[in-house]
Image (cartoon, rainbow, N blue to C red; front, side):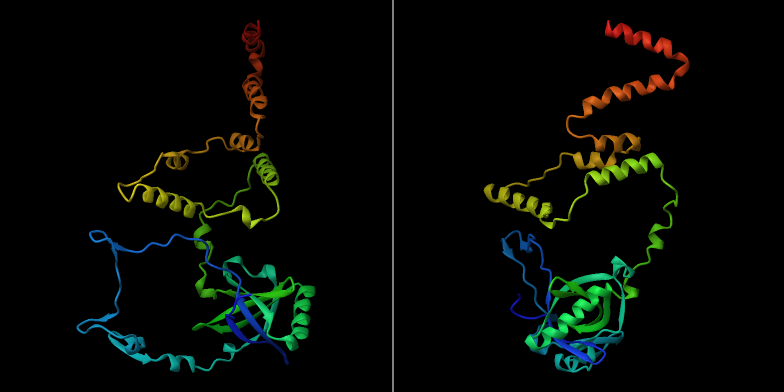
Length: 298
């Protein structure tokens, strides 16, 4: 468990209050961090906070300002902002319960683990967790953290619970604006069957360990090669294969789906079947079509 809770307060359900702590459930992935470097000297570039006509300033002289009209600001210090009274700073009141599938995936933002703050809170915590589990509902409320108030959802997760921050309605684009030009057509039944078969073939349990950031791996490889080259010369790798994949069009979707379903070693067995297909279409010329084939066998 993290050494420091991201938020401490209480969950309130009617007259019941449960002291809890929440911890971030995620962390930043492995990434390659770059700094801006002054090439002639090889030294890193620094940034200074400065005022036009004054120059660099001390951090203690900096305040937060809200521009209410061009060039005019209301100044606030950190203590004034912290003193803003909002009950959700310390209390998450569950005001609504909904089915989990009623919340569009676009609204979910970031997950946090929720645990009871002490031994005395455990009983009420467990009761709420199991009530949510049995009813298959998600609790909703609002919570103030780090300078803003969030809509949050609360649901069971193993022995604990997970709180997820949600986006407000005005923060989510309407999908219709992007999807309206996509035809509302029924797909070909045979194509759909093939696609479903392909999905079934690749179906399995979710294992996040299977995936890793290949871009980060490629950047690290590039950095190692540059180190061995002692920084000399540019290393540009472009074999054009990505461009070819982007430029090629799938003309025969049926053939592409069938090929996708082929297992290693099955391709050769299926090729004769594709050669016989044209002969079946030319039914009126069936006899002439067989004679060349007989000569080839002879």
